[in-house]
Image 1 (cartoon, rainbow, N blue to C red):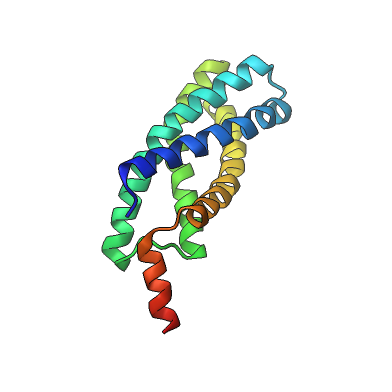
Image 2: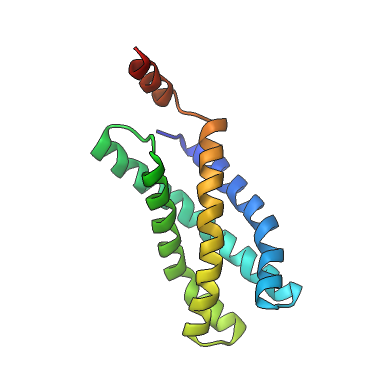
Length: 147
């Protein structure tokens, strides 16, 4: 299982890259001024960073309890990304609606577009992160499977 320091590195790297990608995406797709796009993305990133740490900790404990490993198959990675975004949407929806002065439905539509962007991004980022920083238990599992 990942250490607290590794989880923090993961969260910070995920959010920094996410901010760099999502800010222009949000401004372009929603026709928002740069300032509004930046505020929404940065606040979302801060909330997401805290949620990311907590969510991944709980998800990994559940995965380890159910499957005795934190290694994720492709379907498990899809489930992981989708559940993360659903939880984050529930946390961010009121903020987006209040900040932009829009109704919850409009905020939900906007958030769903961002969530779709982030589901794809989260899937790719987490897969890449796991390849760059694999856990020893995964390598041992691969050796046993190859034997």
